[in-house]
Image 1: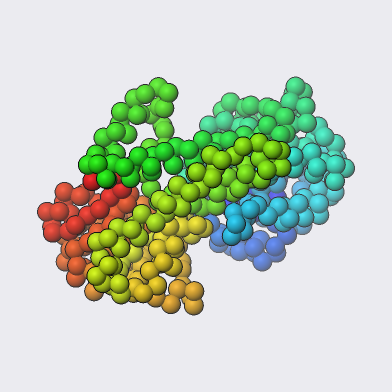
Image 2: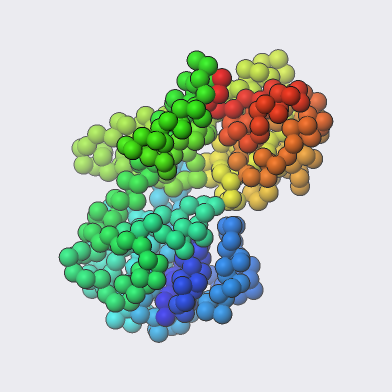
Length: 422
């Protein structure tokens, strides 16, 4: 039997994936009200395929807030999401508190794995504070992606496992769990594993920043980034899976957290992290691409325009609005009347007095002089430009992710602006 402690996005996805692999699973969270909702089939996350996977495997999953229910587990994962503050700094206090209050109740022979993202050095300090046996505690890097968490939990690319002594064999319960997923397992020392997740995200940020820098240049010189990206994917040094789609900077909190962590570690240890400053600056610039287009094409002559916004989440297939470019656009255009739609994310209240949220995308268009598509939800690409033109009182469409066919837009009398295209 396998236990999961901490039932936010990470714990819920991995526990259901574990049940899908045939294991009996016990899921614990100290929040009794959350446990009640989970038992009733109500989940605080939105992930494609999650409810279907849960329905197919719920007979192997039990939810509890009583730590004694974990006494039969020979393998337990701590899988609480580590939240970030407004400065993108990790708040590890809830995770540490959860571990310190539940770990003493676990059987001495239990193999314990921390999945939550932590800073380098955390595991060594944790073991000393909890008096845990060093070789019974492990750290495993998680690489779930909002909007694709179920797929990545079921079909991981690899498992990165931090250990006090990576030369020693992993305990049988953990090896058996790994075997069910059939992917490479990379044991390494704690510090290397803790830094590995940050390294992955830093390389991702470098691709995002380089892509956005060159895509913006394409707009200025008459080039088309989509044509260039196909050439890059055929370069073995870059590859077919490279992140080469331009966008509105980085968002969601996880990548930003790792940049803040690297800068902090560099300051503590006297190393250089100037490149991180450049990535952050580039991301901040990219986030306001749509605002710049609106100011150039519309707002300089109509600063109180009514604007339709499709998408509030920071990316498709998630309800999260953490560091969302759409939120920044709404906050910036305080003089405009914003009418928005998002299929999942919710946003309302006194912080956004100029915002009206609609239950459908076409309903948000009525009376608007411009449409801005801020999240790449698939349903937006299925809406005909002719239907958009019929409802807009203006002709401006700001479509950073290229959700619409620009030739169709132009044929229907729309002026469509997309990142990386002149």
